[in-house]
Amino acid sequence: MPIDKIKKALKESADLKLLVAEVLCEKIYEASMALASAINNGRKAMFCGNGGSAADSQHLATELVVRLTAERDRKALPGIALTTDSSILTAASNDFGFEHLFSRQIEALGNAGDILFALSTSGNSRNVVRAVEAARQKAIYTVGLLGGDGGRLGSIVDCPLIVPSNDTQRIQEAHIAIGHIIIYTVEDNLFL
Image (cartoon, rainbow, N blue to C red; front, side, top):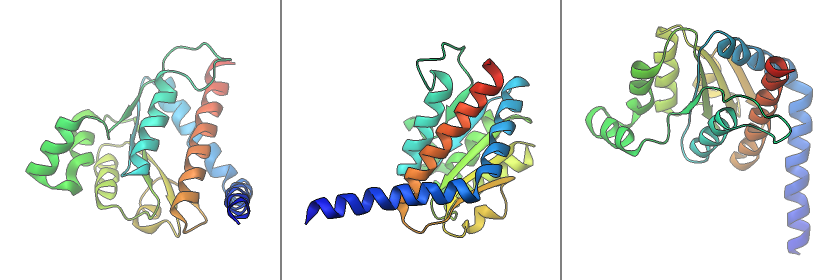
C-alpha cells in the first residue's frame, strides 16, 4: 500500500536525523563556530557539490545572503555557491576537465580565512576533492557534508560531518537539516 511506503520513508528520514543528533552535534557546532569566525573576520563561505548537492549548495548560500528565517531581520552574510555560473562551469569543464571546475573557482575567488563547504554523499566526487585540495593550499577551512564512510573527503576536510547512511536521498535530507542548523547557530552567535 502506498501510504505505508510514505510512512516508512518519513520514519527513515526522521530516524536518521535522530542518529545525526546523537553522533554529530559537536562537529556541527564546530562547523558553526568556524563559519561564524570566518564571517566575523570579513571572510566568506563557499559551497560546492554535484546534482542534489549542487542544489543544496545554492540553497545554503542563499540562506546566508538573504536570511534563514523571517524572525531575524539581519544584514546579508557572504555566501557563494560555486555551482551556479554556467559560463564558468562549462568553460572550466571544457578547458581543464570536469574535475577542475570547483578548484579553478577556489583559485580565483578563495582567500585565506574563507570557509568551504564541500557536499558529497559519497565523499568521493573528484571535483569536490580537488576543490578541498585547492582550498587547503590557500588556508581555507573546509567542512565536508558527507555520507557513508566519508570517502576520500572524510580524511582531508578539516571538519567532516559524515551522515551515517548509504542512502543518497536520506543523506541529502540530513545535509540540508545540518546546513540550516549551522546557519541558525551562526545567526545566534552573530546577531543575539
